[in-house]
Amino acid sequence: MYRASVARGNYLAQDRSDIQYAVKELSRAMSSPTINDQKKLKRLARYLINRERAVMKYDSQSSYRSIEVWSDTDYAGCERTHKSSTGGVVKMGNHVIKTWGNTQQIIALSSGEAEYYAIAKGGSISIGIKTLLNELGIFPKVRVIYINTDSSAAKGIATRRGLGKIRHLDIDELWLQDQVQKGK
Image 1: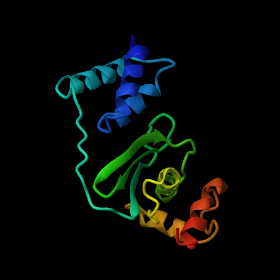
Image 2 (image 1 turned 135 degrees about the vertical axis):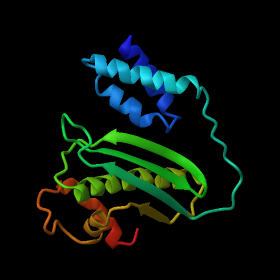
Image 3 (image 1 turned 90 degrees about the vertical axis):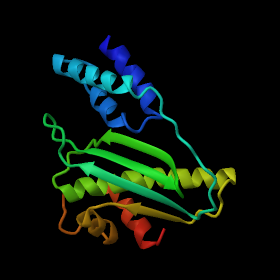
Image 4 (image 1 turned 60 degrees about the vertical axis):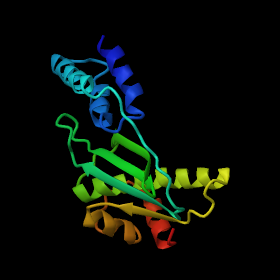
């Protein structure tokens, strides 16, 4: 019963940014759900009873030449594993194109590191969207990606070259520094 309900929640969460985080947390307990997880599932069900539909309205807007990304992190939010959760939104003009919420695979040792991983996730998603739009010829004039974060430490990591004083940063995530230096 638990697994079937969470699977249905996963299906709904693709289009419902208001339940993505809750469904992500419920999905983490799929292998061995506890009574507490069942209570969380009931809470989500009660929330959805009064909010059966989600309507996404896309009004006409003038052309735009940028993709805007907002990302944030819940540093070490999981009490059991101490992993951080990342969430974000990709917008083109006034339209929300994509939202996400997931658990970071790496255990970040600082909030700045966790926020940097969130920026890197947002950057990779937005580059993928930009590439897809350019290949389809829909918006070939999208030239700039703006990534917004509330962390000055993550901004500092993204704008410098190399690891600096943060020796434990995953090397695979340094591609973002190169993109920032090139002005992309």
